[in-house]
Image (cartoon, rainbow, N blue to C red):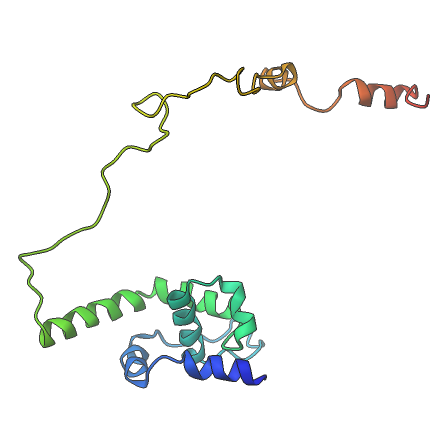
Length: 169
């Protein structure tokens, strides 16, 4: 493993305190049905990889270059733990811990959202086009119209010539 990969693994490792809270929430490992497979990636490494993706916003396949964990193992474990409500339980524990430390005012809650129409939403109040299709050189061509009428794209004049043998000029 390169020095850069080792630095990423060390710098992006979740804190021990968080891991101690997460570990009891994880479902027990199920043995492989055939009994023969590669050893399962350590749960801590898989969780490090999941939090790396969640914190950085990188794609799952970018995990390979970090050396933390393979992308397929991390994503598979993420799906397993979503099904087992691990992250929901962690969120609930976090709310309870914050409530105990700071206190949550449940009377005052806010939600973020937008209540606007799409700017180019079409005829339901969106902006009108400043030019017609013809002015923008976007008139529908006849071959597009014919395909929409249900005629198959294949079997045109070119393929007919090839079938007849008259394509060799």
